[in-house]
Length: 230
Image (cartoon, rainbow, N blue to C red; front, side, top):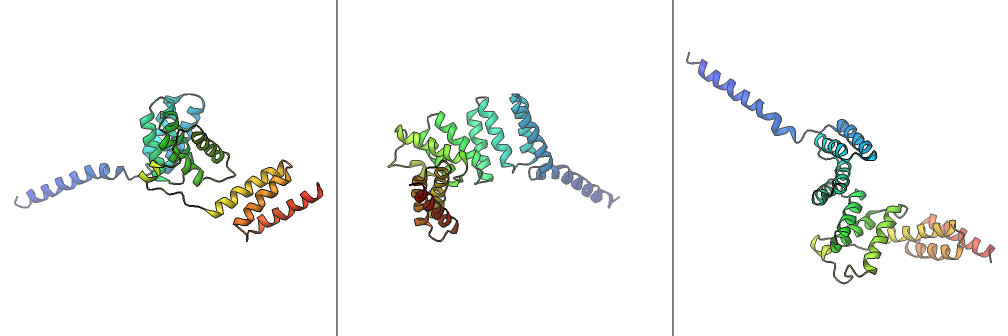
């Protein structure tokens, strides 16, 4: 009998440990496939206007995969549509923390802050959207227009970037992106037949990035078009 009690205690301890292990590890378990399925169902429900059903599916998606940035952003859109703005901000920020290059969350967050009149915060997230975006993306241009609109209306102070300081962000000059910007503008002018304007943009781009063969070729072709259309 002396050996029975220790064995019995050992069995109890093992049972207790196994009873609690699933709970302690459940938050780290990911099921990407089921998360994707739930996200797709949520998107379809949202498209059909059933926000409550969409909300449930998106929540299930992030439950299945707590690192699914896209689903957090989708969840934020629905929460915002239902007037739950504070919660929407939380999940947009969660999406950004999971994927710092996830552009939609920056855009949605900036637009929400602007609608609520928190212009310093809107300023920051608009700038981040522009900074990270591609100039061939229409949403980058829309973010830029929103930012310029705030500046034009005097809703943000050009001399004092409080959010920039608070969040430790510095928008450093990026020559490559500036060259891309002028190249994109030049292509737009070229397609519209405005060869002089295109020439100015390509000239600005090549001045920034003189070793880019694509820009150089665009510049030469545009110079030829200008000469032929005099």
